[in-house]
Length: 561
Image 1 (cartoon, helix red, strand yellow):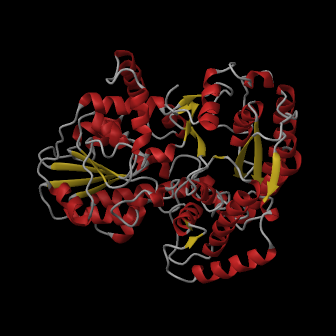
Image 2: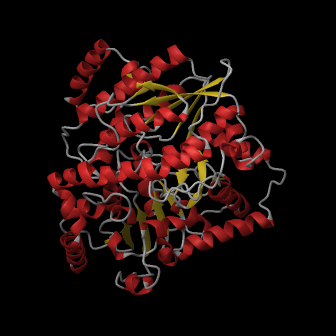
Image 3: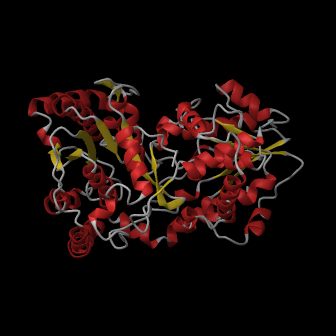
């Protein structure tokens, strides 16, 4: 009971003192800020800081093409986001190497995008419109607008379909070969930041957006016949249908370029297919001359892990996830009994990117957490600790209804053998490792990190480290419960194979990117280019840029840099 009261007190106190959230909840005031100060500031910085840099480097100078070049389709859509200024370097490098860039922008062609949410219900249309008018045309790409790819009659038909779907409790609907409903669910979860109601008035708009995006993907395929697709986002109604549509076609490769929070000086290509595509890792293994992890590679991996386990990882510092010191005092308040089987469950952020597509056994994240509680409650020999993700209250957006809050609504009195560790307690998961008898994850890197520390792991969703004998992989509810209740969850793991995969995942999937000061956590205020001229993007000027371009143009093995 004391544990429950402590949690309620902490969360309510946090809400009372969170002045920022209180201000942002006043929508009229927030809209005034965005319509005046923030927007004017954004325009000023782009026009007076970023545009002169683009001009000086030569990124706004046209690059002549032959007409028979490789055609690369770029469904960028949201042009006001900062990655546009970084990915442009890659796109211009591809142009220099003979590619024709077909660049899709929105210009209010869709109902909703990821830039709309509870805190920004008006979206960022004004920002994108400014970019589409003042910056994007100067970059020298062939521009296409969504409204140019779809007729009014097609929109009317889409609205009819969306109206029907939005009034039904339906989880799947196929359109042009794409199941759009999981994509819509992703968008809704993101919009509400975990507080999605049972019947959302936003559902219609996100269904329309997903249908339009799929229709436009089909139109561009037929009219422009792209050879390659390069995107920047896997999730949401305005982005993911393009990936899914072209991934269904065997002759057009799709490359998604993402920045990485734990290494702001690197990029990843196609991170999502690491979760399902075993061939990706097998290709890397075949490209190696040494089948075992080398001494140098092990040192590089250990250096990365040491920094991460210490709490000084770039991701943790950027989001202020943890208080670096004082964990033991906080852990002592949990009264962990080492004579029991202590199970630690680490939920993802419920509204995180593409999470709805990660589940294997359970319907969603709360279904998983609640089933786990029901499976172990009243077991005197087991104690379940649910360690909420720090990103629920730290980071770019705050969860509107956290996992802990949802559990307290479901269980006003938690079972005696269940403890919630809220994110505002600031405990690093690594400080808990010595207390964990078995760890449970959905898909996160923490599963791999626990395995590296000889902690048995149960994974319930798609994760990059599956199918290798590193973790327990139950296939259904019954097997999951039986695995939870096993007296001993120890696994016999090949240490070399585990460390080699960890090296692949944490080090080699990240391609160094030296053309900007950093790729992740960049704002318009702190964007800094590390090149002086567009000639620095030419072949043989930067080996990592050459590798990125070779991956896209020539299907080079991504991790063979």
